[in-house]
Length: 308
Ligand code: MN
Ligand code: MN
Image (tube, rainbow, N blue to C red; front, side, top):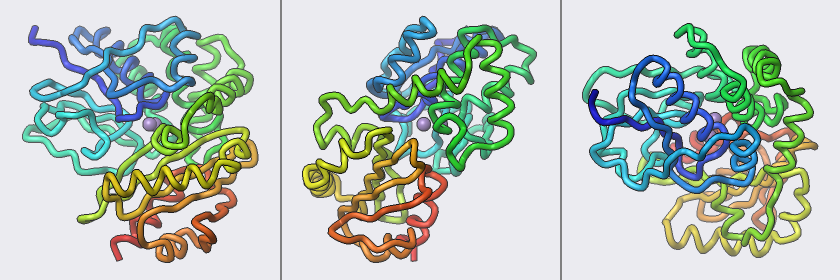
């Protein structure tokens, strides 16, 4: 057998990215392949809670993927990959985001579905492979699904996600509403986070032509705790723009219970971004009723506006 390959998700890993790496590695191992779960960064408090709850070790930290073999989960664009991914061999992609810019020399297995989580897709892959989902794996997959869909409340949620969540909850032996509430409470733990850490904690970059769009998201059940620090958060955003040269930097403060967001903006194109989102930014801030999903409700219109 050749050297092991890594199943790995995006930078600033979230729960879905981490559990997908673990679940894919387990599936491949069950099929006799030497695949190791890896991560591209530090775990957030919610993910630490999940790994502890299901008694699973954290995936190994991969600092540089140069010359490695990678199976990408929960992302497929280079701006979000582990360092060195351009010099790695990508042999598989399993994702639920827009198709990005990852290219390969050889044909690969590429599975993309417009569902609420990569955990949902992986559940289907276990079924297709005829591999049983054990209690721990079900708990992990359910955690990714509930985290990404905000306990099936996000507009990204599909009927497939609802069916899969019920089934996984049964195998894992949990009530998914109750367990989901525990996850939301963890997600909201801002703890001692600095404004900069709030901006960059759950952060994604998108290449749009020659420009780069950065979007951070703070998901919380206590948005007031962030909104009362708005000046400090916006100052941190300005610093990040100065360092990284983003055309636009948005931070979404998403109220998980009210299902709405407040957006802060830095960089250029404030008016165009406001038009794209159908709002007016006043003093760098705009209210986005009904907006919970970065990828479904924010990225597409803002990308179109920046391309124009
Ligand atoms: Mn993710
Ligand atoms: Mn995901």
